Length: 101
Image (cartoon, rainbow, N blue to C red; front, top):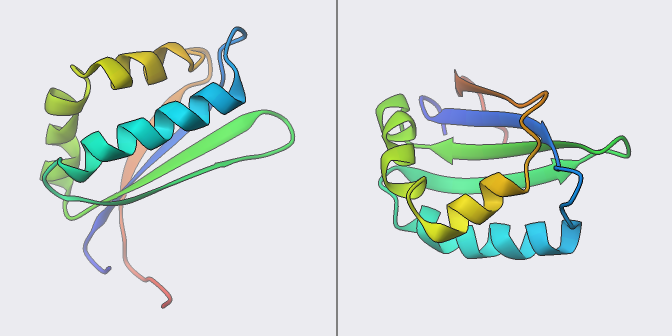
């Protein structure tokens, strides 16, 4: 969707985290995100080196930036955040300029 915003988060799991529990938590968090204004969809991928990429599509930058105000306070988001290593964590927002259908 041209003009939409993509939130890209690069991270690794914290040492104590379990991938199966992370994925279950991601599915629970999806119900919260679906109620968040501007949310479109989410993709979560990983490579063999343990690097994860979390891609969240938003209708616009304002909604992407406002989302943490409501999402961060939820219990499921707190659990998700506890499974992510802070070292090496990075996040950017980029505008979508072309999407292949």
